[in-house]
Image (cartoon, rainbow, N blue to C red; front, side, top):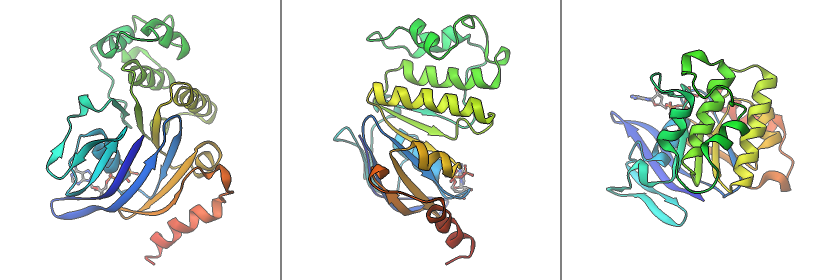
Length: 235
Ligand SMILES: Nc1ncnc2c1ncn2[C@@H]1O[C@H](COP(=O)(O)OP(=O)(O)OP(=O)(O)O)[C@@H](O)[C@H]1O
């Protein structure tokens, strides 16, 4: 479980997040949408423990991870983040990426690579992989540490539609079977409406709309885009 309560955050005195609250349940995916510069990446970085907010709290699996001056270090949060840039390690092969973060229990790194369709690529370095293979390696590495939470910052944005669809399905399958609480930043409104369990729209550092367990309710593309329009016309 990821719970963000009334988080505010500024950089160089410029407000970035204002009173942000949301939650993501285990085994579910929360899609976070919003215009460029809305503060989506900043929020993920705060949840991962890479930034400390000015106020508010982050609760992970019922434990306080961030509150006031206290912030548990990223490595103690059982939370993996996949960055837009993927941040693969150029000097490590595919299998070394997994071995470096792998935790002993459960599925082995070899099985994970097979499931991510990277078998046969174990000795390859990142610059010897295609775009889709790099993305799958980033997901495999994130899963190898057996996280309880996964944060994805537009990791599939540069892929063609079919590959993106496949990777997203693969990712969601993992989230559900491993009972991982996940947040995925995306600009794809249709994909979020169709695939995510919950949806939050962030505009200018605030949560404009938050639909929890939206399967109980039909959300229209128009409804989502209206939030963006308000931003565009400064309402
Ligand atoms: N390292 C930084 N130093 C100063 N300002 C920053 C830094 N990183 C982000 N910002 C600013 O913080 C604000 C929020 O940025 P953030 O990356 O969180 O937005 P975002 O919603 O993820 O945007 P995008 O969709 O373009 O990735 C922006 O105004 C951005 O310019």
